[in-house]
Image (tube, rainbow, N blue to C red; front, side):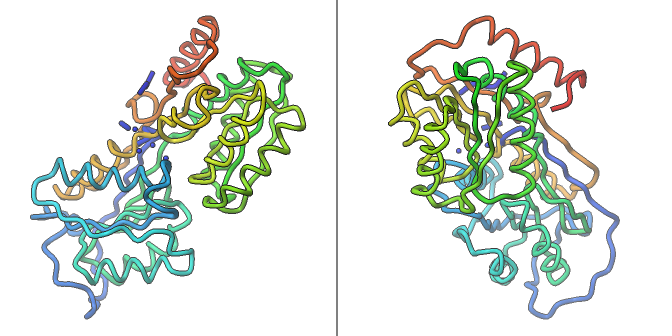
Length: 341
């Protein structure tokens, strides 16, 4: 089990999927840079120049910062790699334009750190056949377009078991930012985990509509806590800080973080966090692309130690050894395919 990242860490080993297709001859775009040969043509890239687009600020201590840290990891591990400043939160309508700007600056590898950027990436990839586009949580594949997918549900299932085993009121809640499929799926797995530990537990799920609205996240969290919830889990990017603030202010409340070891949020009421090792996933992707081997499918989860559950040593209480043993057994069952997250 993964213990002590950044928002997933060995990324989040939530599962990474690289899918490539046979090379086709796309139309040449006169605006596309005359870059070095790329993995899009099955050839190695002499040197990577990486661009990054994130849905939030790279100092959010969560999801977007994971991406920034991951790109820096690549730069440190692969000699000759160059990076350009990340484009932070361009808005859904601005993603395609941001990607074009990065490609025109000569970036031959562009990461889109959000599943909702899939359509924009697919569109721009056709315009710049000499660049390679990678969408975290994406579904679309092409000669120069590859998704990375994490089996985050395996980790959130374990986090749910932790919540279900620790709740005293039998009421647990999840607070999300944007209501997107990847987060909804992670919450669904969390709920399964809660009920695996406490069958009659009640799980409430709410969304703020934004990964940056800390005040709204705090307000919604306070309402949940006032309604009897005593364990709050978030997957809300920077807005998760508002969830932590609400937990800090409420007696007997507990907190579970997301994507990275968020031990410093809601301390000492923080039970732990589910992890996504984005750095490991990004590095695997970059190496495959640089070597011209970005074909086939790669899916990483608990088995590959890319996702996992982290217990917070700063938690003031104690997680019973019996509960930890149940979670460890569930982890083995998930890896063996005996349990579906």
